[in-house]
Image (cartoon, rainbow, N blue to C red; front, side):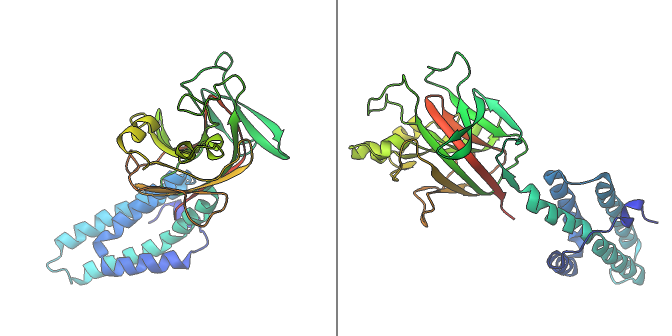
Length: 317
């Protein structure tokens, strides 16, 4: 009666079993929706085999048969209808090992780490693995011939990441490349470095720091040590002009020194914490691209001598 996919058993996740069984008891008509969500989540994590996909398709066929029988019965309490519903519940419980698989593989798939073997897509950048301040780190450098560009962002995009909500942790060190302006005003270059997330093609959300600003003897520019921007429509310049002091803030930083950044993202909100602080130094409650998902990238301005030894991404459950 069933395909061979049913023979591939997985360890159960009893928490998932209880939640889904309760949902089924309360809302029988939502069974197929639950299965569809399971199938979608497995595919999204890219950890689903052909057998598991066939499993969901088999359930879909059973559900169609249940609906047909229910329509043919004179009342919703018809014995045949009840029997098919009970059978379907048993089949769903058989499916739960596949749910377990999705949750178990999520723990590994949802944790992406930067390392020498990490697959990266580079935008306006080249990379080298070097020793910097005692750590093996990724060095992001401009493309040949672009060493003195002024309007370019460099990105090292984690090719296998798919981030919607969750936490991004990264250690960075940023300072100014030699040859760039050292003036303290907006025309100076301050070692911009940080993280972009929900990156799709040429758009994404970015949180970054300006380490040089933090130690200037100038309160105005000190208050611009952190920054949020949303490319391409909401550059930091536009945000500063339209909403002064809302998308930037002060935090103590040191140029060229290791700095820990932690960005927590949920829906349209994001918070950045620096160097293990318990409270965020920058809060954004209206991410300009709204809800969405995309890749995660190490981000640096072309004028920045930037390094990162570690970048961890954990998806929200």
